Length: 198
Image (cartoon, rainbow, N blue to C red):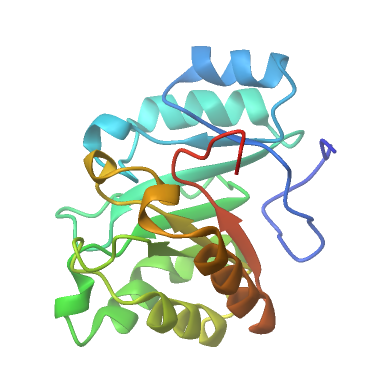
């Protein structure tokens, strides 16, 4: 069900059934016209969670306004310089990837520092191919997300050339991951080129 008149607070929001990623205002308007439930702004040419241009993010924000759920990808946590949203933009969800963070003992503190300004809009990201991404394991990310009071955890793929989510994880593995997130009191979001059969 499409939820109208929502803001950045996630406390009372049930996650929508269909999320579509867009790069610009034209794609966002098409998605809205087709009844998509959540608009996700990112630039896939810059990576799995590549940040879109600031002007594009603002244009999508104007389309979504307070009537549609929308999320923004900020790239990877270790990107330099880090991407930040203008203070007046308030997406429903904000996320950044953790590639390379498996090699950094202080990644939790870095994530907290980067995402603190987004409050309950900040969600954590698990990469199914976390070893190839040198990212923290799924268990480590879920535990961190619960401690950080994240509303949700996203399961995605880092290297799109290695195959879809279904090629990296079995249905049972995905189901167990979802269960672990729910047991930690958070919502589970599954992405990564899913098919109709999923």
